[in-house]
Length: 351
Length: 188
Image (cartoon, each protein chain N blue to C red):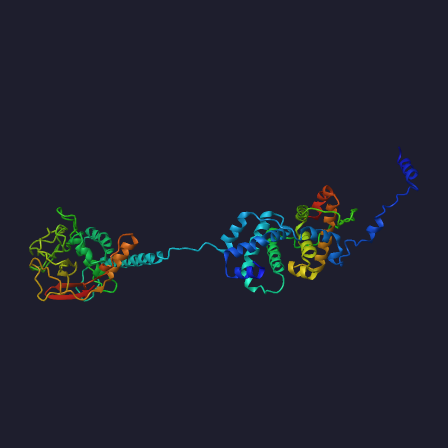
């Protein structure tokens, strides 16, 4: 079929054919078209249809929605935080600061002496033993409590604590002792704080050679003092000097002395430093005398001790029992004597 | 308990009164939310947020006027906010496709459709159409009010409404398959 014939076909069939419009077409043309939107909503049947169908309709909510509403909005869970925790953390922080301060103090002490009115000790010539004192002391700086001395830790450690508290207490004068902890005695596990430095000294008299004052072991359980002067003729060595027994006072807080001496490299003078616990005795016992233990002074009024407080804080952090009674105690004093040649310097500090 | 007493008890934080208020109105309000939000979970979220706001704002309700109307306004507001979060409307409300002159019979009152069907029809609409239709036809807002609420022009509001009506009309007249075929044209 050629195209012209198709045209003819259509024209024949459809010309004159009428498609009567639907009856409602006119009605629909009357309705507002999409462009006419100014009509009020009520006139619009579609709107009405939806409105009547949905206006009063209720969809029952699921049961858990109310619970969600309560939990999330109406009555949210109270934030129960451990109010107690904060001050434990602050106590731990204080402890840490004390440790750092003590460590810094020690570190500075081992590097160079500090002169606070006492004889100073110069750095040691033997570094190896010197290292021992450094690690030994930080562990003891934690219990800054003097009462540790009375505990089972032993006299030597206590003395070290005594020395350390003198060193690390930030408010106290810093007395730096470059001490060398020598090898512990075979009989005891405690380390002795004998310090020896100078291997030679010139103007050696009977006062020469650092006298080593060591503490007896923990067997006595108390601080004991001892002092034994080495014979002048003997060269200084780093041998530990056997601890001498000292008479231990019957009281609970015996005075203890710890003497650490070191010699300077440049000066050939021996400087002895003696740390005595308790106030300076009226009559200063000469070093050769044994048992310079002193009874503690009459207990003064109890006062709050920082060391005791820290110790209890340490207990708290570690979950051990806390004893507030231990926080206060009679005043503790530490006396340091230093002998410079023929002179004697002393300093008493109160802890 | 009368409504004022119930409200007073809720103001005092009485949990049982709150529960009762919720039970009384939650169904209605959930339908309101379902009109606006396609997904059931979004509607439920809007319901909870709306009720939370109702309880929070309860002290500001002046005892004049309809409490249900006050609550409904809060719920619609919350539904709009949820829409903004879940079904962002095309910023350009003007789309290019013009609605065809559809040969469809106008819906009459005889056409009794179940509420669920109506809701389904609404939820099939594109978000913009649905929102404007809801606000105008069912909430009774004017075009200037709708324009301000949605951040559109009045002209856009009007055209969205007419397009919504046209689409609904087509669906109602049974041309569901055809409507879905053209869905892509109107989808935003």
